[in-house]
Length: 59
Image (cartoon, rainbow, N blue to C red; front, side, top):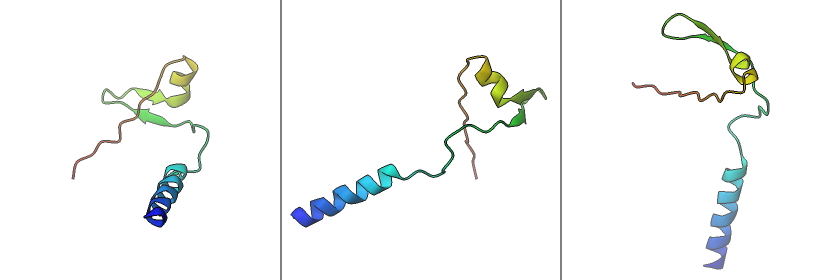
């Protein structure tokens, strides 16, 4: 039982510490909204606003 718990704890720790990407800084990018307006990420961040990106899709 002790070996099993130790294995579970180590497994959770390894998965919790790994990231999907190695990026540690934001990259600037440009997108167009539904009204055709061009939006740049850094313009919003420089204004002190928060950015939430929703990667929602349906198949």
